[in-house]
Length: 337
Image 1: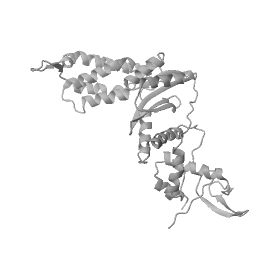
Image 2: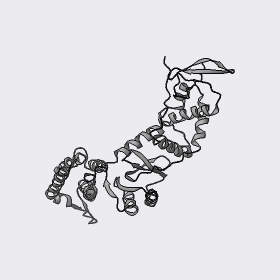
Image 3: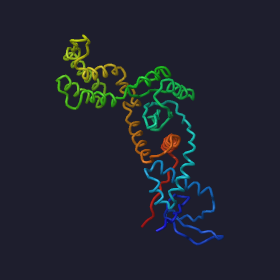
Image 4: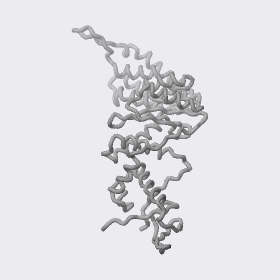
């Protein structure tokens, strides 16, 4: 059967509408949800309805075929409309806050596209972002200084162990508290130690590492540091054990993975527990990891986008996700059967 284009209530956004006579030769409709009466003579209402479908395509994990079946528009018509939106990108405006606690991290997409996100964890929203090809120190310094130039005080920055991020924070906002992401430290160390270490040193260090994200108080921190110190005193010889090549006389650490995990913790230790002094400081960047995961899941549904449309899709996604919370997002719905 041919598709029937479905009309949408301009007041509440629902698709459950019925014909309700005619007025001046134009078909009237009544919404079963809110009871509004309306016609479709206004072009601005039609454009608004198209934009709702575009927003749902960006955020709703729906393909063109699925939206076509729901809306009654053909996939070719929807594709033309959506391409018009993707040819342009939304204007991003930084929301002013006197003091922010930032999460900074980057993620990579195909075509060497890198998204660096600055999230204000105090209000759970994106403060700023940059689409580039890597986590460049100079670009992040510029971003942080631009944020500060608006009168925004950066109280703290939580990030992983990326060297460029750490250098940029030290250079742009030296007075900000630096917090290392505990989840990254734990995940990387567990990867190097493996799930079932063969050595006693690796097994005991793995048990210590699994407790990192469970630290909640200063007593927990002191107890954990004591365990780490006792472990090091007991296994210092094992860590420093070296193997020498008989032919080239080259030296290397025999148990390099266990040593690598310990050195990683030792270097991060000064900035691991800053959150205990200030409850506003997040101890992990898990919020960004979740955000990136949902974004990549959505964009993977729309394969075949050009490089420009791919970049603008990411920009539209961030724009829709971070709009003012007072703005109600209309979700297309199926009519009652």
